[in-house]
Length: 77
Image (cartoon, rainbow, N blue to C red; front, top):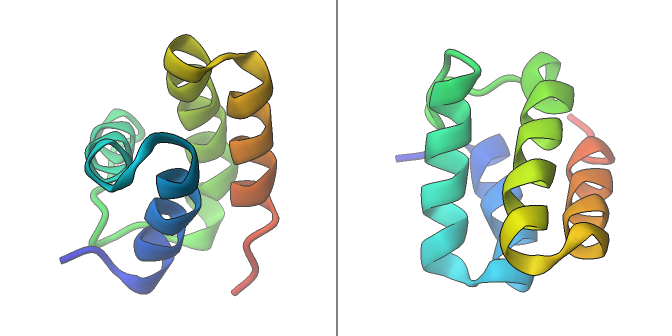
């Protein structure tokens, strides 16, 4: 089960790519930065946002990827 931070990232992503893809994207990109959705911290958000921006941009376009990354970086504790 993802922690509250990862759940918020999934919620942001769901609006752009759908719930199923959002969960998979968060999980995979957390792994790429050396964590899991359960252990994600606010300190890891900038790196995660950059990776997710690239993933979303590839599938949904650069503008969508950038918008999602900005929303992720704006999440506050």
